[in-house]
Image (cartoon, rainbow, N blue to C red; front, side, top):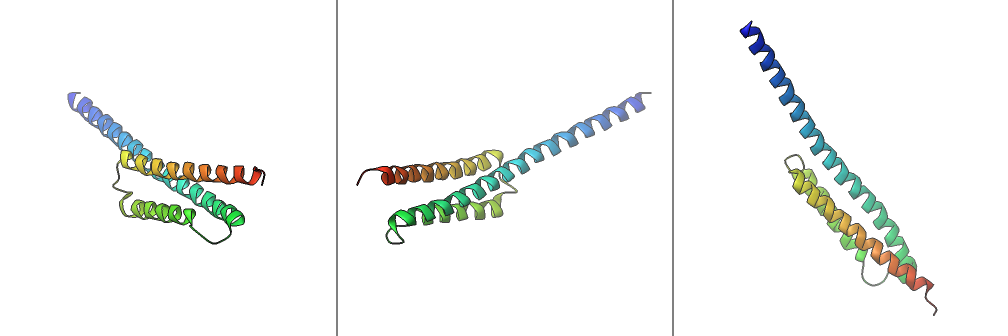
Length: 120
């Protein structure tokens, strides 16, 4: 009877550990997926921003979108190289960086919209 109870307890502990391990891995995978989704959304927004900026300013001058695109590429390369071993905190930091870049682009687009509406 004690052997059966010990065996049952060992099986329950193993099942609980397996569940926790898979659940933790699920959070990591979800975090990676969220970072990739945020990067995809930022890339789409950057392409729109580039078109809007060029419509107003032409193709001359600085390219604020180009630097944001390069930063996004750096983040994607980091994720490719380090994403599997990255902690949730590191993934969260990358996501925050992408979100900050998107907020900056939104701010620049708002300025462009206000400039378009201003009387000349």
